[in-house]
Image (cartoon, rainbow, N blue to C red; front, side, top):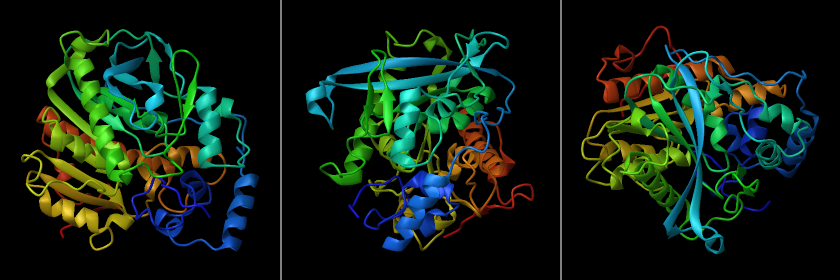
Amino acid sequence: MKSRITDSARTPRRTRVPGLIAALLGLTTATAACAVSPARQVAVARAARSAAPRTSEVPTLPRPAGPYAVGRDILHLVDRHRTDPWVPTAGPRQLMVSMYYPARPGTGGPAPYMTVDEARLFLREKAPGVDAPPALLSGTRTWAHTGARPAHGRFPLVVLSPGLGFPRATLTGLAEDLAGRGYVVALVDHTYENSGTTFPDGRTLACVICDEPPAGGPPAIARSRAEDVSFVLDRLTGHHPAWRHAGLIDPRRIGMAGHSIGGDATATTMATDHRVDAGVNMDGTFYAQVPAGGLARRPFLMFGAEHEAPGIDDTWGQAWRNLNGWKRWLTVTGSDHGTFTDLPILAAWVGRPGTGISPQRAEEITRAYVGAFFDLHLKGVRQPLLDGPSPANPEVVFQHP
């Protein structure tokens, strides 16, 4: 089997089942990370081909819990000072960004989950052979509205970065929940690093680094993403912002969270861009290590699956030692690599739910702890949830290495 970089928090040198197939089969990431025999590969492929939605209904994301309605805009940003790092012949680096924001209720129209082309490429890349109609996946029920009028006020900004191979849509549930809590959220697609990104001219660009590592490997991806995020911050908070509702953003309160390599990129961004005040790594290996001098005492949450317990992923232990500000190391019992995204909802939709915590619990726990972290560090609201174990969330383990 050809070696490939997959979106995983484990070492990239092992053969593994592609991410969504593992979720469809109910495998944990730890199981999927082990060497897979040829017979097992055949069984995986057969099971994937037999997977299909049990209903003609579209998937539905859980409703955001905050007090605000949610608006969404789409931005196309072009960095004319930087050539695309993966396809230099494409010219300047171009990014698509979904902006979620607190909105007035009853305004705007339903926001689609992703384009049909993005859905088709996502299924082809992450679940080859699964008979799920791309149109149904693209129509996943969300709670954001396009063209919604913004709520009054100024709000902290949170940037979200998805895992390698995963389109930005797979962090929609978290983005909507944060916006409902009173945040502006910039959800970034890193072009050529995910299954597919649709641009305003109708082109949908597929991944070019998912099968073969780029020069410099995963650390180079994390560093490139840090440049992407800094550029996005420039365009959102500069003198001539690219977003029509940029006045909603309080540039003195900025956070970032990412899944898998997006979590690694969060720490990398904080090491180079001091505008980011607080960060969350959701189940990502620290390929680009946290500097030995820390992150200037800024708060950081390490939030992972069971396989991120102390002594398993050495990069988490090293990062923990280097972090020199407020920090927490939390793991979720019964979780896998996709727990912190919309993948559990999508896997259940095709009839292959995981064997651990339910998709609803996965979304609830992720939203609760990431939201509490930013409420504490960007809004200054005390969060007992982060002080220690909670009877309401027995799956969440506070690690003390």
